[in-house]
Every structure is written in C-alpha cells, then in structure tokens.
Amino acid sequence: MPKHDTRDPHGRFAEGALPPSRKVLVCLPEPFIERLDAYGREHGCGRGQSIQQLLEGVLAPTPPPELLAAANKDAVTLAFVKKEHPTYKHFRDQHYIPDQGVVGQSLQYLIFYDGKPVGIIGGTSSVHTNGARDEYFGLSDDVGLKNAQRNSIINNNVFRLDYAAPNLATIILSKWRKRIRADWEFMYGVPVAGFETFVVEQRLWNGKTRNGACYRADNWNLVGISKGYGESNVRGRPTASKILREKKLVYCKRINGVKLCREYQTAWNNKDIQSELDSRRNELLKRDIEIVLGTI
Image (cartoon, rainbow, N blue to C red; front, side, top):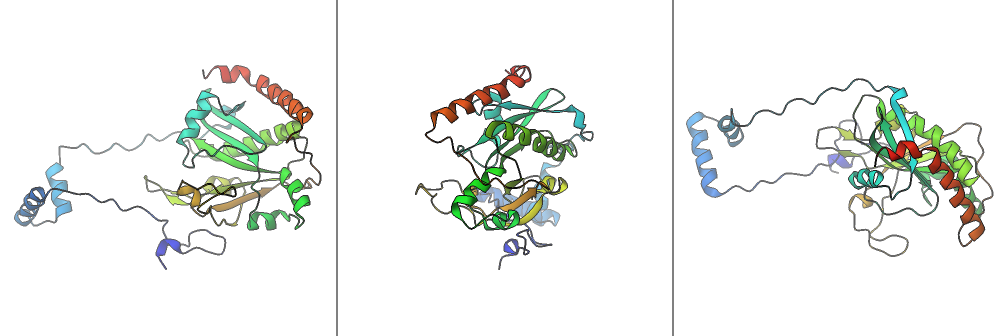
C-alpha cells in the first residue's frame, strides 16, 4: 500500500504518512545537460548542486513571509451577501473546491478583518447521505424523518480566508457558528442542532498540510472519511473535477441540548413560502448593507 494511502480508523493520514504530492518533471535540452555534467565533473558535484552553484548570486533567495500579529477577535466582522456579489465571487473562484452551485438552503457571508474583506464563509443544506455524519448525529433510518432532521444540520460548504493571522480561522468559525445559527433559525424556522463540513486532506505548495486543523481547534469532531464523488453525480452528470472525486475528512459539531427537526415544509413549488423566504433574505441583507457597500 502506498505510504500516502495509509489512514487511521478516523480517516486521517496515519502518523508519518504524507498526503499525495505531484512530482515535478523538468525537461532540459541535451546540450545543457552535457554542459551541466561537465561542470559537475570539474567541481565534484551532482547536477542539483551544480545548478545551485551556477545560479548563486544570480537569483536572490525568497524573503521569509512577513509574520502577522495574532488575530484580534474584535476586528472580525461577517456580512450576509448574495452569491452574485462580486467580492464573494472573487473569493469563491479562488477556493480549492470548484463551485458546483447550491441546492436547497443557503446563507453566505463576506469576512472582514479591520474593515477589509479577507475571505468568505457559508452554510448550506446538509449533504443527503454520509454514514459517519448520520451515525454521529443519530439520524433516523426512516427516509422521511431523516430528511426533516437534516434541516437542523448546516453544511459549511465554503471557507476561504486570504489573511493568515494566527488563530484567525478558528475565531471566524466561532463567530460564524453563532451568526448563522441565528440567521438560519430566522430564515428557515428550524432549530440548528449542529454542523458538518468536508475537507480534502492535501499537502500544499508551502509544505503545510490542509487537514482541518482550524475545525479541531474550534472543537469539531473528526468522525470519519467520505467515499468521495463517483464518476457522475446522482443526476448522471460527469464529475469533471478530480478534487471533487477525492475522499474527504468529515468533521461535525453538535450543539448540546438542541433536538433535531422532525417536521419541515419545503419551499419547493410553494410560492407563498418562497415569497416569505425572499422577504426574510432581504431583511438579512439590509442589516449588513453599509458594510457590504464599502466593498464595491
């Protein structure tokens, strides 16, 4: 078994195992290789060291990144926006998981730090099926009841942050949970009993590993690993994105004392409910209109 395929019972990469990384292949012309080998024989070094010596003084070393001060929780603000907002779309396009649209309930937010937009975070309807999630929340085997219960679980569908202050991601998660819980209950009229999210564990270009550390710091539980998307979705459409087909770490967080929803009336094909939801959404937009206007 390849080293990077070794996982523990919870789906994490086992200690000492590295996530898969892509090999970098470089094609060099044969005359250059011959000159490089000649230099190596003359100076007693291999090709890699020869290149380093030849480029010494030519290419300046990359300066270390500027260290940011620890995040100030009072400097964080969330503003409710529509997905069509240009600033939201800017950050969404940079997220590592491509945008496949949203089906069902959805509340999306811009993240501000010291008054400047630094990312986005959002919540949508929970995924239809995930065994580890179902077991964690104790969802019913009855399909009708389970579908109602899922309305009490918010899926953190996107979290993109472009400001790497220490502890900022965890501070944002904590603020987001409180904010979206209130907005979700106002918008959809159901109690929020918990949260879920799915993380593709990968070694990044900077040597770090994406593994959901900010969720663990916010006391989310790593409950398992998903099976990943198939070659096509439930509607038979091909899954073009390779990263969507990856297995994902499943994180969940339960809110103590809140029972799962048992009844829910969908807005699908119900004009009265859709009109009421539009009215509530506009009210949420008005609350943050001054903050959002500052980004245009």
